[in-house]
Image (cartoon, rainbow, N blue to C red; front, side, top):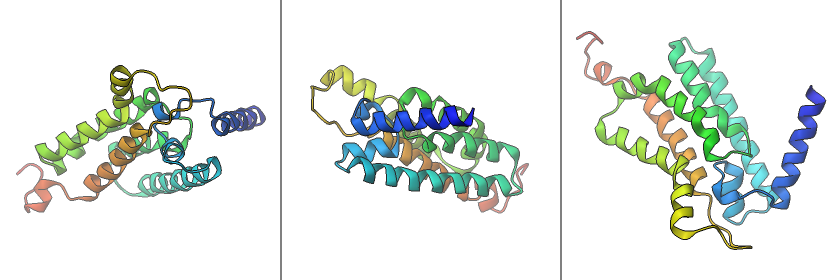
Amino acid sequence: IWSAFAEAAATAAQYLEDGHFALDRMSSAYALAATAGASPGAAMALHVALALGVSVAIAFVATRPWPNRIRLGAALLGAPAISPYLYAYDLTVMIVGLAVLAPEIAARTGAATRALLLALVWCATGQSFAVGLVAGKAAEGEVRLALGAAGYLAVLALAAAILARPTRAAAEGRTVSG
């Protein structure tokens, strides 16, 4: 099975490098870097660095004595970042992660931060559809920035910042029941 996986990964990497995928509709760091003008090699190096960082962060969270909800949510939220072949429909995993983390997010944020998170989720998952409706399909050779990738990376960063905060109750010196 691993040889088949390695072969499929190599084929997908070659297809990415050859430009066979609509990068502007993708949500990966690779797509963002490539549509911003980076060479395929540089875009992949940036993506691999981010994927390794996310993997380390997931491993760190998994080893903490935190509630399973936080560990599972963080893994679901970060896992899509590992693949350079990432479309908006793959981000349903991110949505499940945010749903698992919703009680933790609500305990640490106000309405404005939650609204910002929701807007970033839309940027990650819905903006390419909206751009396609408004601007139509990209013309041959036209490169549009992979804004979905920027949205997803912003969701990751904001969620990490939120989870690093104490709950509002703890910040106010109250117990959870108080």
